[in-house]
Image (cartoon, rainbow, N blue to C red; front, side, top):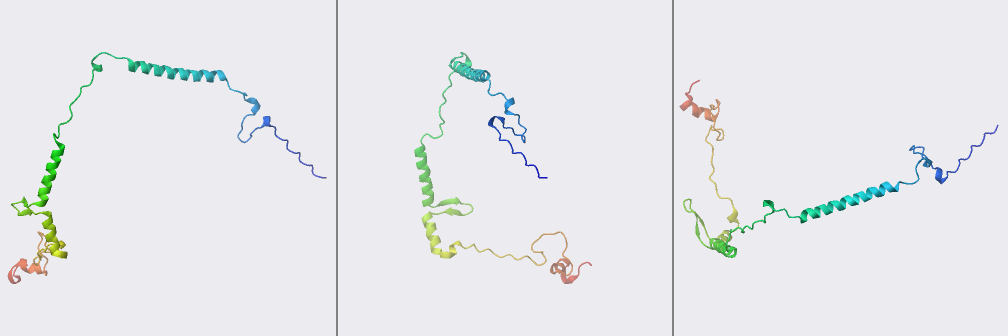
Length: 175
């Protein structure tokens, strides 16, 4: 027996679209429009509230309340830190120039003096590449048995170079 042919699917009409997957309601069950009166009343209420608030703020700021709160602020004089800033700057720059161009003591007790910057630069240039070499330091060698200069209350171990010096002449120390 021949298989029956499946029935063709009906064409959906525009007013009967239904989404089964999202489980939406049929369009026929929903109201076709919105209630215009509540929306307009809400908008009008917002406009009236904003207008009343602005009018109230305008009246509040225009009113003058007599009393100690409404006193005019006092004017304070500006700071008197410098009477003549231009003259102060000129004196400062002249003092700095004098220090750069003249001789003087920095610390007389320790023998530290300053010299003009031009003279100092000339002396460094005369020295050449040795002008920037580190100063010569005397070398210090730790004494024998001193453990590299470390201080310790412990005696030197037997057989070390410091043990003979610690035990006295010719090794005649205590056993």
